[in-house]
Length: 334
Image 1 (cartoon, rainbow, N blue to C red):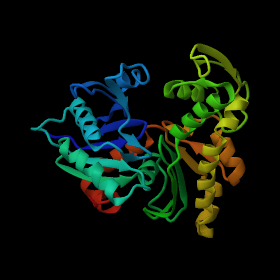
Image 2: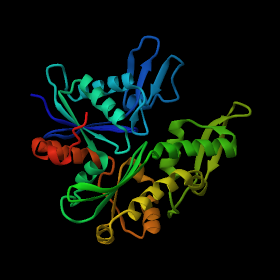
Image 3: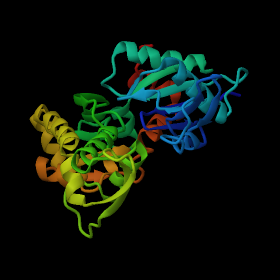
Image 4: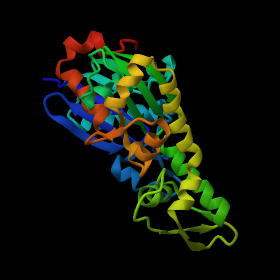
């Protein structure tokens, strides 16, 4: 018997929730392909380890960028393989609920639906990530109370104010944690003449990256290729340098939250002083981001227990009562 699935098809990571089982798969949204033969060599974590380390005929790529599909065929193959890993086959075609950024266009929505159908789904519905995140965070969105969720992913950042089961104000920008990684790469290249890869930039972000000053900060030793000589070189980076390097994408995220708050009706805005802003998504784990947002908005900021799984768990709650909640929460556009 086919199991209903909820999929958070993210730019950085893809998570799958199976009805009655919980989160059954969480892998980086990366696929490695042999371009000579078209063969898929690796998927998920294994493919992520290959980024920047492959021969010329092997490409490890992310087929989604900024929350949208950039390579439909590769995305379809990746989704099909991920669904096979959780037991989907030609004889076992589940209904699938897919979490998508609110910022994507109708064409991009159609591409997501088509990719899932061609991968083996019997029926595909879409749900906005802010609503799924709010459900996963157990916010009282069905009540006449203002609840705000800020979802920062790999390619998009979305701020949504919700009440009575719907979105009252939404502000979305196509800036996420990948833009932070790119800013670190650009800074190291510009200031030190050192070329570093995507994975190294991500490791720097995780180890010493921050949006505001944090206690017990340490320096990091970074290795890369010197542009002038082409030889390996090591430099030391400080957290203050990284804060300066990533200020532009972080400021864009903060500005989107401020814009969302500025459009909030007064009665709902005052609720946030008691409810606070709920921060979810993998990008929200940047050190000091909660402090930065709280200082600039004047509103308390809280984390959920599992920020990266919050969206897919919210969608999972929908499929646990699929028929009853479809009319209220799902976007039936295909």
